[in-house]
Length: 240
Ligand SMILES: [Zn+2]
Ligand SMILES: [Zn+2]
Image (cartoon, rainbow, N blue to C red; front, side, top):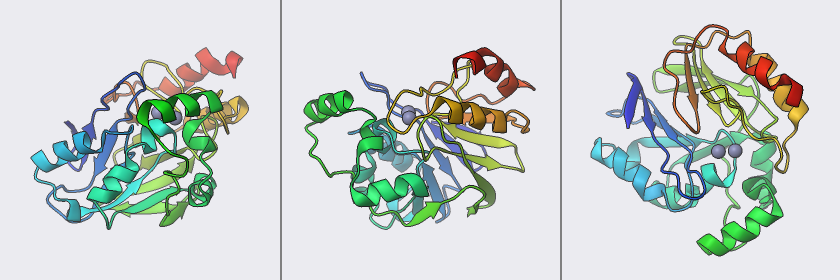
């Protein structure tokens, strides 16, 4: 766990042979309006909840979880977390919300081969990611989370319903799997991915003022150099 800002914590993903997404925790951990961003891989719910409990957070303080997108390494332990935090709302971009509610798991697994492997490895049955979504997010939505205000950016490309969350005051971008530190970007070969859309999403981020970049994997960047996204784009544009 690391405190990034006063009301923003990072819980590092605990990668196995499949990665486990980081979880970000937005809001005052002493208050009752805590938001989680991304759950993580199958089986990682108690690891993440254990860290929160050691910080003194009780399940009833957690209001909602926002998914940056619904790949297995992000949503895998959501069913587990929902059992521990029954009142927690699930907020997902509308394009992936429709799939979750219909039990369409193509985005969750990304490709058939991976689905077969992951279901065997973790003994998963079809339909465990048929999940009720309480709020279907759209580009431009303004979210008041605890004491901070975040805008939803629809950033398709890595998956169809990938989002970023941007906080204007502190210039923080929670980027999911669209953009990472170390000049890396999300893969664009899975179900619902589109390299042209990913390029457009990165172009959209390029002119934005981003001081802190909080991706779902590798390391958070607490000091983002000016022009970082433009530099990332320059390296990747020819491949997208
Ligand atoms: Zn992903
Ligand atoms: Zn991921």
